[in-house]
Image (tube, rainbow, N blue to C red; front, top):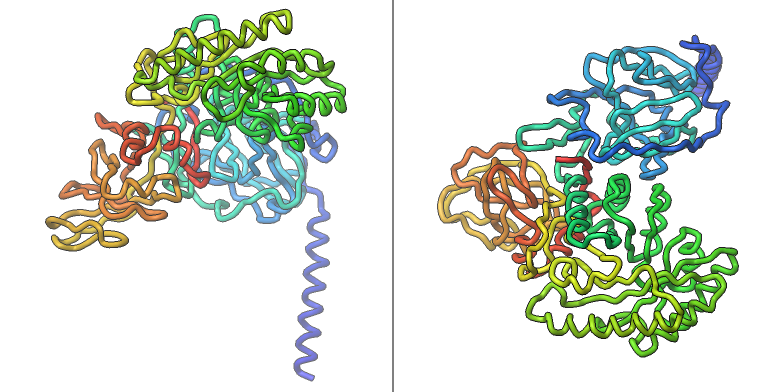
Amino acid sequence: MTVTLGLTIVLVAVIAVTVVGASISSVPAARPDASQASLSAVPSVMHRPVARPAFPATALPEPSRVPQSYTAIPNPSDVSRRVALSLTAMNWPFLGFVAPEGHLAPSVMDSTVTTAFASPRVWDRSVEDPICSVTGASDFHVVVADGSALWDTTATPGGAVWAHEANVTVQATLRTAAGKARMAPLCGRGVELVRRTRRGWATNGLMLYATHARVHLDHIVANLRAVKARVGDRAVLLAIKANAYGHGAVPVAQAVEAAGAADWFGVATVPEGIELRQAGITLPILKLSQVFEHELREAVRARLVLTVVDEATVLAAERVAAAQGVAAEVHVKVDTGMRRIGVEPDRAAALARLVEDQPHLTLTGIFTHLPASDEPAQDAFTAGQLVTFGRVVDEVTAAVGRRLPYIHSANSGGVLAHPDSWGTMVRPGVMAYGHYPDPATPRTVELVGGLTLASRVSFVKRVRAGETVSYGRTWTAPKDTTIATVPIGYADGFSRLNSNRGHLLVNGRRYPVVGRVCMDQTMIDAGDDPVAVGDEVVAIGAQGDEQITATEMAEIMGTIPYEVTCLITPRVTRVYGSR
């Protein structure tokens, strides 16, 4: 009887709360401005022309020139089930808002969109959700799921949100989408988003993970402009495959296209090309190898320039293009010595003629690849390739009755060391990101590093002489010393080959890695220096007068700088800007 009575009381209470809650939620909130349009009355996506600013528009995509603290605007968790900020350029889900401390004011608004700069209000997502607004702040930010912020954010009636990130305009749309928003523990707590120090960027707070890569978009643009200056009026194709060699394909492509620093992009996979198209990239994109037939439909839909290597790839491309009623652009790949893919030189003219005969294919280019152009000791081999390729170009010209507009063979080594390889287009790869392809390659173009891989000291302790450090006890302290731990490891792309061989920079000084690099942590011997928790650590890049390059790390690892930056894993947040 007692149990039954208790359950009845609880049931009645639940019903009462539900009824009261429904009554409260049905009361309309006061409209702050009757002229504002409801989000429910407009399309979820509105496309508008984007006027990209000149690059770089500012020295840094930062809210102010001095360090400033930011506070997360608190929102009820219910928002996370009903609203998302969908970034069409990045495909990042909405996380929350931040604004300078002291610029928050609580309010209750209905589903309206206001201008964050011109109004002391911020848009609301639902009738019943209380939110906070920004008062007198011109550096209100939207934060996305990986902790990045969109800078100088404004919103306009109709649901379209525009933002500048890394000096590049990207389009975003405000839409209702259940389950997309992730407010997480961000809500209601003060956080420091990004601040600039004498040593450059300091990123923590919303970053949520100390290890990050600062991608210097202005350096990449500068390297490409240096390439253009060297090769004259030839077209420049930026190899942006492998997530732009680990730098982030979409932000890099957007910055490069906005700056006019390249004319084409080159990708290794169809999804890489589709990703760029979905981000709004309009430059031609060459798929650098042939496409499997099951990939062709999407490749053609994304307007990728196709590589063909034999009769089968030509006829498959024709079938798919015909089915879509479009003309697909095609380049012929010739194997002059790489022995990887490509038509044999003596069959290239016939293949080009076959392409020319297809009603839905347009032949615009022919290319080859130079496997040893970065090694002066093999210049004779490279010269032989170029002689063969020149003969093939002449034969193709005769076969199709015209000279193709895009004739290309020069990779980074070709740009740097072989002017006779330049043709009508060059394909810089690793040099665009600030690295020479081989230590012996002539430094005919001055390059600047495209990223800084950084972290912070997480723990400091004194160890006695004779004590060992890390797995396998491979390092023994020769004397009493300070061991600093850094949350970076081979799961971040900091290779285990750096164990007892590599270095990290702290406070402008170089310290040796001691013991084995762990999956998530690395230890350094700081001696008696005053290294402290929170000090910035640089694994690749400059700090003070010291510098560790990807080339130096590659030498330790017995590899090439390409692999060093490509190894930086997705869990390492990329922060984009100029330095």
